[in-house]
Length: 280
Image (cartoon, rainbow, N blue to C red; front, side):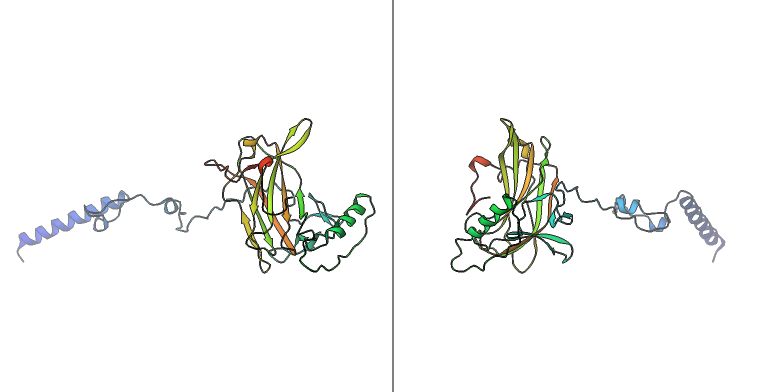
């Protein structure tokens, strides 16, 4: 090889070495790894930018669930055999029992397969302070004379204050019988002070097509804004009626949630509310 060629190769090698040293000093990759003109530089996604210096991925931050405004919505707390914050309980149609979706803890049980006359007699005794243990009489026939076919059973929460313009969501877990037309419901009923007393002015139902074989969780499709109807406070009402049978309820949640658009379709003023079958 001629001396001129050797000198040329040495000069090129020196240029390459100097370029690599400059790139390393600037914190850039080697020139062989640089993108071509047809490639575009892109900024690393946040998750990659936030990686620790040792290369481990960042910890995933999980937001806690919103605060449940229903006191004892999981029915775990109780006194004298009944759950705190809920009522009424008569131990004929309403019970506080072991159970729930997890198979542990406590839940609400409702039995609508009770003769209406038997339930009314028991309720009168309770109202008069003559409480006693009672066992229901097994029902027969079409069962239209049961609590299921007439009055239904409702269990109500404590009152919950609502804020002006705020949106709220509802969910609950239920298990029990249902048909295409008849199934349990969970209402949010809104009240305001009128002529010196709190009166119902609004209600929004949650229709729960339950199964007797498994627990199912239901929720509203979108937040409701009770204050649009002048509501000052609400109560959660669990309502079971037809078909006659045993229903179980747990994990009732009512929480504040941002409203992105009006959702008044299922928000019904109490005066015009209508439901299939008996009402609570």
